[in-house]
Length: 414
Image (cartoon, rainbow, N blue to C red; front, side):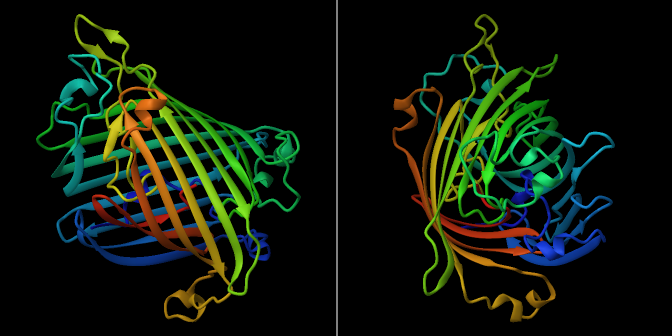
C-alpha cells in the first residue's frame, strides 16, 4: 500500500481558497492560516513540513498558497500558487500562477520499457495494444511552472464580472449557459520537467500551452449538490530541435444529483463523472526516421493516481487515449465532532463528508470504443473529506486488483 500526501502538488488549487461561510467571506482583511504536518510514505520516508494560506491576499477574491516539506531520505517538495488575481480594467479576467519543484531520492515511477524511446522517437507505429509498464524506484527531479489566464464570459453568473462569479450560486440552476453557471475560456502556458536517474533516453521536458473551454454549472465547487461541470481542454507542445511536437485533448463531464436529507445526514449526493482523452498526433510523424509526435509520459494521457483510477499508483497506465467512468455517494453527517477535537478546534471547519466511490476505465494505444472498453481496470473505495479554512482536504482509500492506495489530497476529484 502507498500513502501520498505530496502528490496533490501536480494539480494545484482549482477552486478559490475561500470559505463557503458567507459572513466570513465578506471580510476584506487578509487572513493567514498555517498548518504543520508529519507523515510517512514509501517514496519520502518520514516527512515533516507545513502549508500556509493567505486569504484576501491584496484582493478580496485572491489567495496565496505555499507548501514545503523535507524528509528523512533527503527528498524535498516545494509548491507556491497565487490564485484569482485581477488587473485594472479587466473585470472579466482572473490570473493565477503556480510553481512546483521536488526531488525524490526514492521516487516511484512507471516506465514503458518496451516502448522506450518511442515517447520521442518511435521505431514502429503503435499496434494498438497497450504495453505494460514497469515499476521502478530511482532518483527523480520534477518541476513545473504554469500561468493561467481565465476569461469569464459575460453571461450567466459571469455577467457581473469574474470576481463575483467565484461566489457559490444562490439562484436556481438551469441547463442554459446564457442564464446559469460560469462559462470561461482559460489559456495556460506551461513548462514541465521530469528527470529520472538511469533513464536518460526518456524525454525529460515539455513546454507548450493549454486552452480550456469550461462551463461550471455547480451550485458549489467545494461541496456540490446539484448541477454539473463541463470542460474541454486542448494541449499543444509545438516542439523544438530537442523535443517532439504533440497535441492532446481531454473532455470531462460531471453531474450531481441531490438525494435530500435523512435522519443521519444533512446532505446526500450522487456524483458522476466521465473522462475521455486522446492524442490525435500519436501516429503522425516521419516514417523514415521513426519520429512520432507523442508526449512524454509525465504530460501525456494517463490513468492512476489521486484523481483518476485511485486504486492504482500515479500515471501507472499511459498511452494514446483513455476513458474513465466514476461514481460517488457523498454523505454529510449532521454530527460534527471535528470542531471539538484537539488541533482541529484551532481551525474553521464548516462541514465534513463521508464518501463511497467506484471507478472503471482503460488506457489504449488506439482511439476506438472497442479498445477502450476491453479488460477495463476498476477501483472501489471510501473516503473522508472536510473543508478547512476554505480548502477541501480529501482522504481516500481505494482498492484494485493490484492492492490498495491511500491518498491525502486537496480538492474534490471532480
